[in-house]
Length: 269
Image (cartoon, rainbow, N blue to C red):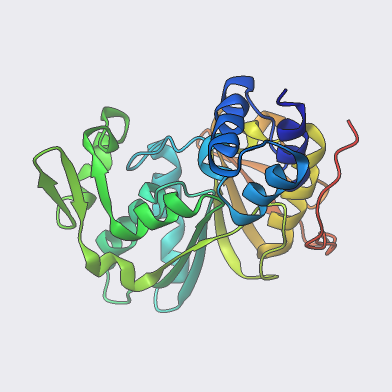
């Protein structure tokens, strides 16, 4: 009964769909439109309504802190200049705010501040709206990021049942809706954080996603993926690197520039 939903999810989002999530979406379509026929299924995907049912919005501040410490070590090269960073599949924005907090903390230690801009996107419109609001629950602060929590202290206000991020951090962050199956601006970013989302894509869609990310990186730009995902990622435009047991990818000097067009993806697996 949910085969059409799963097929459409892979065609448009590139993701593998959990049967229980597909069933919830099917029930929603029937409730809203009366029938889960192909036309109505495609309607909820093209409108973005489907994303909230099929994507995982698990995120918290300074998740996998070794990546933030790695970025911190890279910042001296950008003192007095600009750094452009992307938080891809940002969910509700904790990653993007963590990056901004880190930049602000670093700039307090140097006479030559790093000017920065962060693009943060997700396919889920509701997640992006939550990111823009900057209000989070209790679980947005966890122990595995506690070594960097001092960076959050000036910008995160404790609420009765969660946290509020100071609106001043928004000045350098652009939150927007984007589908990773579609191209980004070419040669735009020194760093792309794309963590803990790659595992949800089908094998064939992964090639398309990586190609779009490679093309969005500046020359020798760096792609940071989740700790559990690095081993499963491979692309001719990326070279795997390791500094102090932190694995990341760097755009190869002769990386091919062949972004996919913004056409509907057709899965053939």
